[in-house]
Image 1 (cartoon, helix red, strand yellow):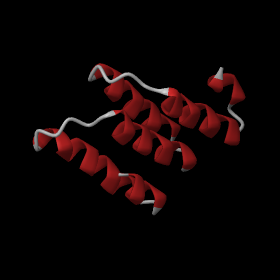
Image 2: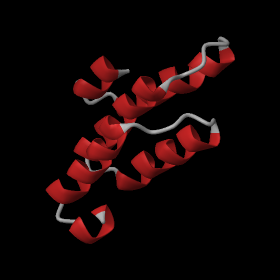
Image 3: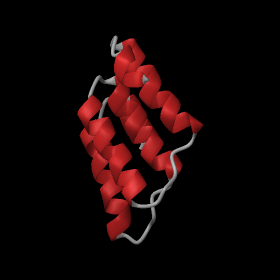
Image 4: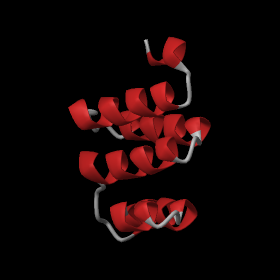
Length: 84
């Protein structure tokens, strides 16, 4: 997922994350955070927020890296108020 995000293939990374469940592989905090980070770096805030909500819905606790990705992305795109 991280490799796909680093190459700008966010849609493919999102499909891989969703396919994990159909293959009975439970995504973890690292999988979700990689996709959140990719979306944030691309300025796709709504998508990142959606992945975050899905993560929480699956009872996967975000970690410091998850929050750092969200906050850094918002700050880079001058959305400091949202970062608070």
